[in-house]
Amino acid sequence: MLVYKRILYKIACARTKVDDKTIFFESFQGRSFSCSPKAIFEEMRDSGEYADYEFVWGLRDAKVHNFRKIMKKLSAPDGSTGGATITIHKYETYRYYKTLAKAKYWIMNSNVRPFLKPRKNQVYIQTWHGTPLKRIGLDVPGSDLDYAKEGKKFSYMISPSKYCTDKYISAFGLQGREDIILETGYPRNDALFTFDQAKVNSILRELDVPRGKKIILYAPTFRDNKHSQVSGYENASGIDFDKLREQLGNEYIILFRAHYFVAKNMDFAKYKDFIIDVSDYEDVNDLYIISDMLITDYSSVFFDYANLKRPIIFYMYDYEDYKENARDFYLDETELPGPITKTQKELVQEINNTLYFIPGARYSMFNQKFNHLDGINCGLNVARKIIK
Image (cartoon, rainbow, N blue to C red; front, side, top):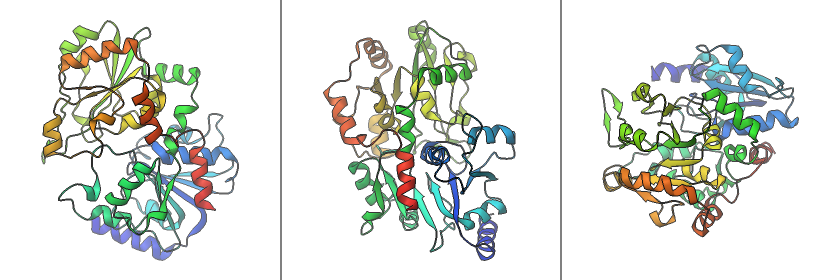
């Protein structure tokens, strides 16, 4: 199949000229309409500066879901497209490859197929999908050279901080090409500075979240060392949900968001009055803004969530095993903007302590180091820099 797809892309390149006003967007290899590509797209669409452009999205489910429903997501709230032409192509079809061959600009947030290489007159913007806590790419001992090969394709890479820039340089082998990294803030975090109560109420209705209870967003990552060729990555939440419901069910609702590598293995039917599975919900920013606190482990979600200045609790029940047998970390635990818990008893205690939460100096120092460039209009600023 990969040979066949490679041939399709070569044919598309041979038959297609690059169009300076076509921009291709993709998030998580077509799995969703989300993250920084979404933010850049929306701000370009709404600005009025790109009315004569064609915006194309690559999506895996373009023919599975209702086409009008997808187009409604891509249009502005008033149903307009800002004058731009907006098109959807199903992931890895010939039309998809033809658009990649045509688009002057590629805006992606994750690695692409090894054979997908932009031509000399194309511009590949890699936004990536989070500030890394755990080591990635070439910084993982024994890693292959895929990240270095991917890094050679980039025309630009977006970074939210000097810290992130340094990690991208080492992880993607960008030494000598440091100038391709643009420290602009993360476009996807624009939404954390512009939402209002009407937006919050709309999301709560969409997810059918009971009112009157506090909302915990629980977003653990996958375990690299917990993988089977048969079942894939296993779910390892480390929580006794029956006991947790007894302890917290009267006051809290949990939004459980699993990494997409393990989401298919989750079943919370028996906890429907306590846990809402939001693993398939596209835009994690919506989950951030409706939640009262975040619980995570080694996922990078806490970097973005810290912009909201709300409680963050780390549940690292398998810290030593993960650090030694999966991936080591870039950050020392003393820099994290919240308490680390390693047992469920400690976790429940820290949840109860959030009643008295006030962001302290450590939290402020964290945001100053990692999030100081985030704000409104990062997406539009990125677009203007690159297209100029």
